[in-house]
Image (cartoon, rainbow, N blue to C red; front, side, top):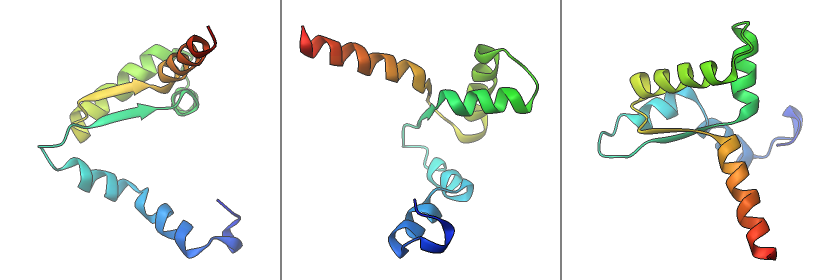
Length: 94
């Protein structure tokens, strides 16, 4: 996205769709399977906020929160998807 003075109307629409109320509304549908991916940077920031160095514990607590509060069916650490992507890319060259 551009600086706040340069945001286009299309970008403003995208930003408005990425909000907590929008997420909660989308998660109300019981028929949908909800899959949440959390970036390593987000997990690290939450760890820092709560003054812990335990990455796995923070991910576990976030996962529990997302399961209970938003009905997430699956919570993934994006580091895993990054590794899978690297492995699959390497296989293309072999």
